[in-house]
Image 1 (cartoon, rainbow, N blue to C red):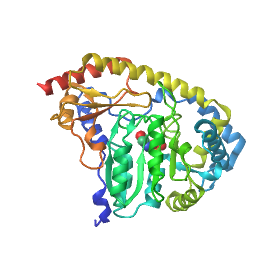
Image 2 (image 1 turned 180 degrees about the horizontal axis):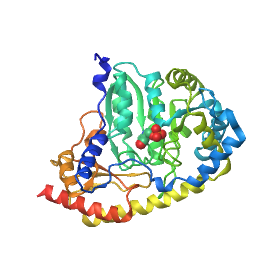
Image 3 (image 1 turned 90 degrees about the horizontal axis):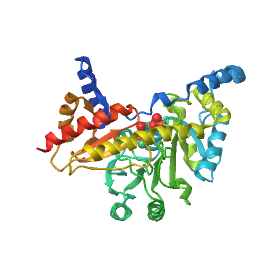
Image 4 (image 1 turned 60 degrees about the vertical axis):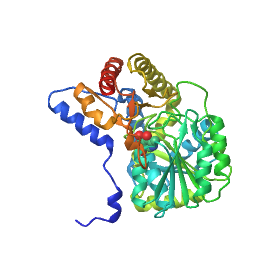
Length: 399
Ligand SMILES: Cc1ncc(COP(=O)(O)O)c(C=O)c1O
């Protein structure tokens, strides 16, 4: 087949390659404790409530719930989400500033479609979400990575990049409980970031926030969108990590002009989001307490994260660095210089534990000595056991 040139830019996900290795080991009768996934714990889905909400949708909305709907999204859902954004995130927006999308992943893809031309520069944190980098690649932008430290994005570095590169079109960031690093920007950093961005008129900021509500430690921080005075920020929210990922209900919050453009793209891409899923989420939001449910998720992930941190501190050899997240789903590990985490993955899987190598989360050259660990899907026993095994694998590699 003669594929479009852009396909040369699209690569298989590293997560898929570690999944293949795990599957091979399991097929040969082995067992693997996997910290590679990026999934919420299915045991925490509110199944009874969703079942009840589903029946109510059939009873109350009948055929309308399975008919075609508006490209922008179901009106009831748009209003409920706008209210949530006003109340929870202090955003000065209403339903006309929102568009329902098929996962925030579609919001990322649409952002690329409406903003990016070939060779435009996209700035992303170093490291960043692989799924976004891959969604941008077909539009053939150039990527520049910006440094982060324990307080978040290094604003001086961003300022320098912006002043030296007039082609910057977009800044893609995950300020809360980042995937993959688990880092969260402080309030001061968020304000300083907006000050720098506000110096420019034509740079769009994509604020991807699927984990923001899963804070289990520390003080809340404002979203960039709530600090946005010029309409530069396009915010992406999602039900995937707080309700269920398979409903694929997520939303974009932006200036009406941006939402209108995305609506046009949505019509061409898939006409609309699944009408039934939108009804299910709207029914759930109206009749159940999403905040109480999020409290349960927070408590469960807090326990698992603290257990993983405690075990890491106890067993990982001296010289290994790691983040200590205040929320979300990931811990980022930096091994001593010279260790290739991707090479080490074969040893790890052989020993019975898996992770994702960090180098694949960089838009350009990645740090080979890094690892992403997820703590949301394994049991407490598996977390302790898996970290002990990984500690041994690292220790052997360091010899
Ligand atoms: C940072 C980030 N953005 C977006 C997504 C995609 O989420 P959704 O299920 O809403 O498409 C993920 C999923 O893991 C993610 O980690």
